[in-house]
Every structure is written in C-alpha cells, then in structure tokens.
Image (cartoon, rainbow, N blue to C red):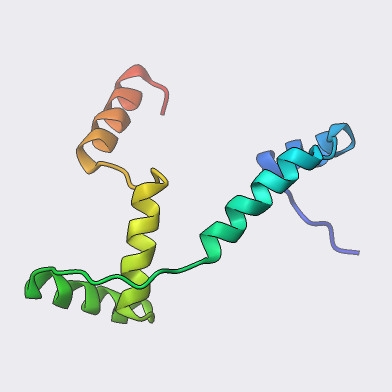
Length: 102
C-alpha cells in the first residue's frame, strides 16, 4: 500500500484528531447560517471604466471563467481580507530577510 506524505499542518491535524470535540448546537447553527447567507447572490448594477472592464474580461478569459465570476471573486477576496497590499507585502518580506527569518 502506498503511503501518503502529509504536510506539517496536515500531520498536526491528524495527530490532534482524537482531541477534537463537536461544535455546540448554537455554534453549528451560527456557522450554517453564515454558509447559507453566503450562497445567496444578489444582482447589482455597476459602472466602471471601459478600460478596466476590458482588462477584467481579458484576465477572466485567461483563467477560463466568465468576467462576472472574476469580479465576484475579487470582491469576495477584498471583503474577507484576502487581498494583500503589494508594498506592505514587500516591506514585510524584506524585514523577514533582513532579520534572517528567511
């Protein structure tokens, strides 16, 4: 039988699996509510420059997705703090290099 190599994070999860406890009913209901609300889409109208729209359409085509989907992904990443500021990232990376952390 072939062994599967786990990442460090996966191994930590595997090692602590027996210590996990089920979520309370209230927590489970709250999380399920959040998931359910996130599934609902609402149609909006949006004005943007022709240049920006053409660039979004080109990027979406490169990734093989409709441009509206790409806009939705970008907005979702922004509101969930998954968008990184390039300058801040580079400063942090440089500071880590300077300190010898990487």
